[in-house]
Image (cartoon, rainbow, N blue to C red):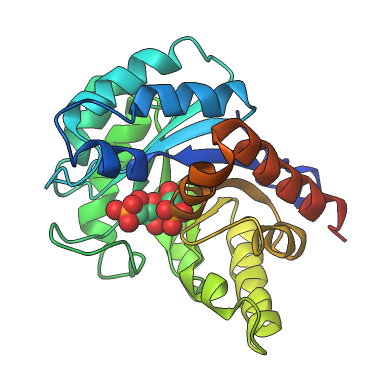
Length: 260
Ligand SMILES: CC(=O)[C@@H](O)[C@H](O)COP(=O)(O)O
Ligand SMILES: NCC(=O)COP(=O)(O)O
């Protein structure tokens, strides 16, 4: 599913479900359950507009086999998007070359990193990213750069060839329910506007959930995609995938209804 990154008010925020944590549970036994492809299928049937994975080099959750099995599954869902995240200086590019997903999200994680916790930094990262971005785009794969919400960094992200930025939203999520929430929204809105102003699309992710999602979608302009995994899969353990995805869709719809 694509969205225009320019007319922020017209952008429909797509939900891309990250199934990393289904794989994490699956990997604790040699039984193949819970199935990652079944989880993706059920989420897509319930209305998710995409599936996201982050095949880390240590295969702590998503394994190489998952990448190819999900790519095959996505063939049956031509209106949905496949988003593969990773560090392009590690193992990501081989998957991109072989699978050609709709989107590659470049994340500057080290191999042993506990989870993603920061974005790229310019100008330091520009020259090593530029050829890798160009290769993805030559393969017809959209490139999104995982970024901290720093307005001054957005022009450099565009200049290196990115199509979109994914705003790293843990600081926003951590502010939920605190006096800092309003200020965090202003920070992310300014970063998103700076990205829109240079023609970048806006994605967002990390620690988003049903509670903090509506305000983010309402107050941060032009969010084309949210990729959500940890909290959504946790909710699905209680509610099931279908009801959970519908709940997250309602949260997005509520945010869009409140857009200025
Ligand atoms: C980039 C990001 O914020 C997440 O998509 C990432 O996939 C989280 O990785 P873990 O699921 O390994 O914590
Ligand atoms: N890019 C963010 C993502 O895919 C999932 O992050 P989280 O919801 O697991 O924190």
